[in-house]
Length: 48
Ligand SMILES: [Zn+2]
Image (cartoon, rainbow, N blue to C red; front, side, top):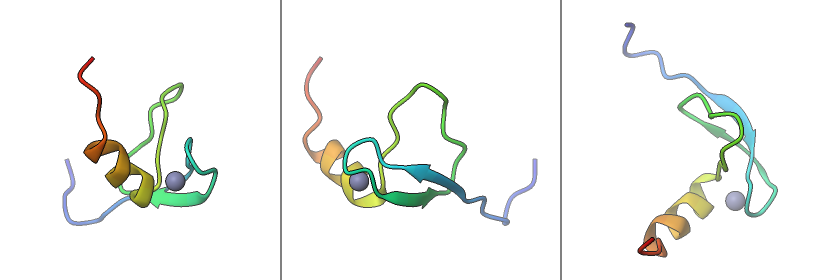
């Protein structure tokens, strides 16, 4: 596995609809968030 060359994948944020890039491969069918929304989601995570 190669390390040191960060990938960037373009995604559309599931929350705000903005385009963003993420350093990982987004999983199809799962919600992806831009960095801002990701931070918010992490802070507001619900105890499911
Ligand atoms: Zn967003």
